[in-house]
Amino acid sequence: MDWLKEHPEVRTIRVAAADLNGVARGKRIPARFASKVFSEGTRFPFSVMNLDIWGEDIEESPLVFESGDCDGLLLPTERGFLPMPWLEAPTALLPIWMHHMDGRPYAGDPRQALARVVARYAEQGLRPVVATELEFFLIDDSGKTLRVPPSPRSGKRRSGGETLSLRALDAFDIFFTKLYEACEAMDIPADTAISEAGPGQFEINLMHQADPLKAADDTWLFKMLVKGLARQHGFAASFMAKPYDMWPGNGMHTHFSVLDESGANIFDNGTDKGSDALRHAVAGCLEALPGSTLVFAPHQNSYTRLVPNAHAPTGIGWAYENRTAALRIPASSPAARRIEHRVAGGDVNPYLMIAAILGAALVGIEDEMTPETPINGNAYSQSLPQLPATWNMAINSFANCPIIRRVFEEELIANLLMTKRQELYYMAELSEEEQTELYLDTV
Image (cartoon, rainbow, N blue to C red; front, side, top):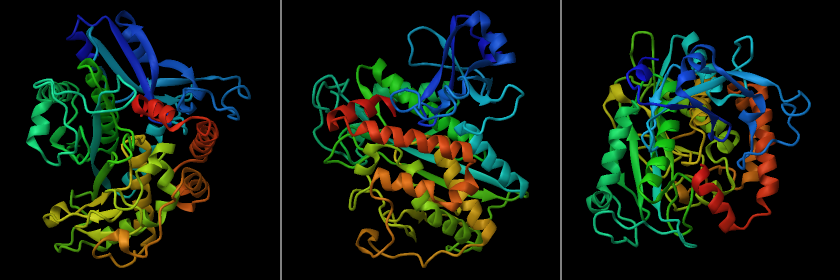
């Protein structure tokens, strides 16, 4: 409540939780009732955590009519109140997560799923360190054809990608200045920004931290902030996997390492190759990739990104300092030895994504799994096992993956499968243009 007391100008608050698609679901509440919400929580149906991408009920879900569509208890996360700089009126956001009425965590909540994985690490005296890299497009979607918005400085539009171009960054300097100011106000550790390979495409890295829940919170909040702030500046921002057929899509690469109780990195053995624990974690992640692809590529549009020679991995392999591999071990000082997981698109739910990565790595460590030999050269040209190539294949792989059942609880698995099967069925009725319009703002 401290932040809210320091900002008496705030007249309304939003309470919001991430559903299975990472969409913010919640309420608008007068600020005079904020103390009650903060101390007692709020309520909405369990089924709200399990809506499809249109915001509709899942038709076969037991959470709807079979259970009477009963309420769960939404309690504040550790984050507390945050500003919402993309709204005109001073407004506060209170992130919340789902519990049963007796206070037990609700297994179908994505944030609870990540908390469960983090708790399993803690039981072994381990603490993951996580950082995310978020790619997004700035888009003028006012017409029938998507295109780069005109520069607020020059009024001109760039027609192509400008990898690592300062000119492209400077063209939107007003937007990025406001974005970094907003990140500081929201305690989101935004680091380096670069222009990427697509027209109007950029990437911002979030700093690594030894708190996976905060890393996921930051990623979820950052996506909300970028999209909201872009609209405030007269254009759209989108993390959808592939807005343009002819340009690379949006990825969300995740870097992680693991600390022991003394604070030492268990992936570090003083050499460039890293420790046995690093290879065990790599093996767990590789073994889980077919089953976890649905988490990393959760939408119809996601699979247009996962194609050969498009700066997104398609083969299941790992390598040292090689960006064509699904898992890359970046060059670094030994103490910073880490794994970069490169499969996920920008359209993911960050709580499920980080849970899937860390959970698979922990299975590899627990089982002392051994990966295949790291690859050399272009992964696209090698005979590697392949990621599921279609949404339907990924759904089936998720349903039948033993590691997924060691990472996620059965209720979340069942809910996600019902959600994705319903979306798959109804998405077939939409044109590609209608799908793009749906995904552009939603994910």
